[in-house]
Image (cartoon, one colour):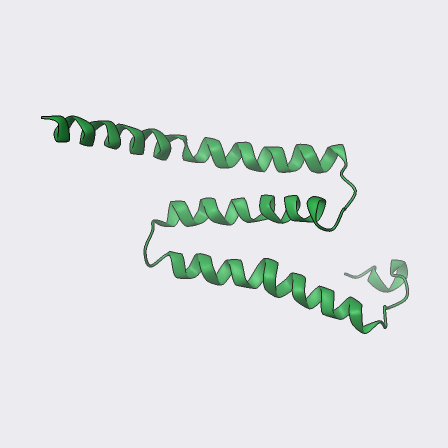
Length: 110
């Protein structure tokens, strides 16, 4: 921020620019955060944390598919790391749920 005035270009004066910024801020940031906050009343905080980490991946996919943003190797590596982190973080939860399902099947079959 201290160097913003030195390196910044001209301020955009088009109304459309500010409408797009508002849409991005509300739809892709504020609404998911409120939905995740609401989700805390019904699911565990670990699951909500996972959902918060999946949100940037969804936004990344939307930016490439819908807005045709250029895709670089750095972006692919960074979002792949986020995706791998989500999977690693949830391996114990996934295996625990699959064990619970198997246990429930055994109880039902008896």
